[in-house]
Image (cartoon, rainbow, N blue to C red; front, side):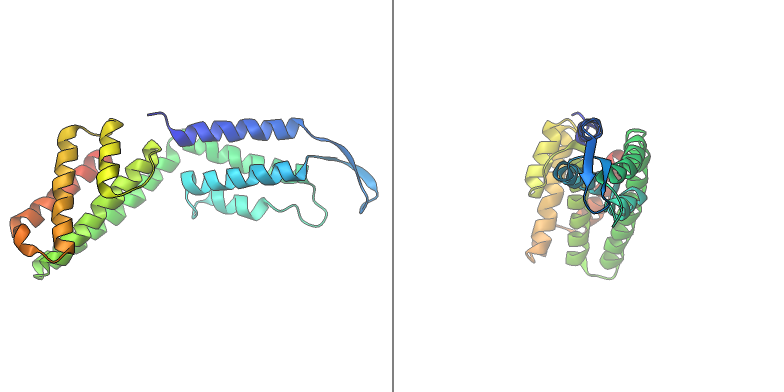
Length: 219
């Protein structure tokens, strides 16, 4: 499936260039002189779209997103054109980093560290005799991983079964993996409903092992 974020970067880039080409001289009554400007409502619409994309593609803690927020207001004596030119530099930097794979690689590394920590927590719970919580925590890791893959593929979030089915249809993984994820989800659901008789201790160990392998292959 085509990268939906890459497509969106290109669309918003084209809209930005259209805005820059639409600039015209307008009289500023406050400063009592003509200024080269662009239409403020069109700029606002573009900023909303660009801000949303940077949040989703780069993350709200990324430098790209934070700098965009800092620079999106014109200020007392600023112009809409000057604002867009500042935002253009930030937007193009984000676009280049995203298309180069740098943002996805960093995000994947951070996500992998979080998953590893949570699976370690699952195993610690298991060893301490808390087997139901161990299975539940492992199941949360699995569902979060599916959400991450859906984001990458441009697939909407939903219940675990639907995301699993949609990802298999998109070719992210094969039918065999889809069936195994369904089985792992069944263990998580049994644990969440307090039904330990529906799975064994070995099922929990296998669950953690299979999720680790799945993360290694896909995250």
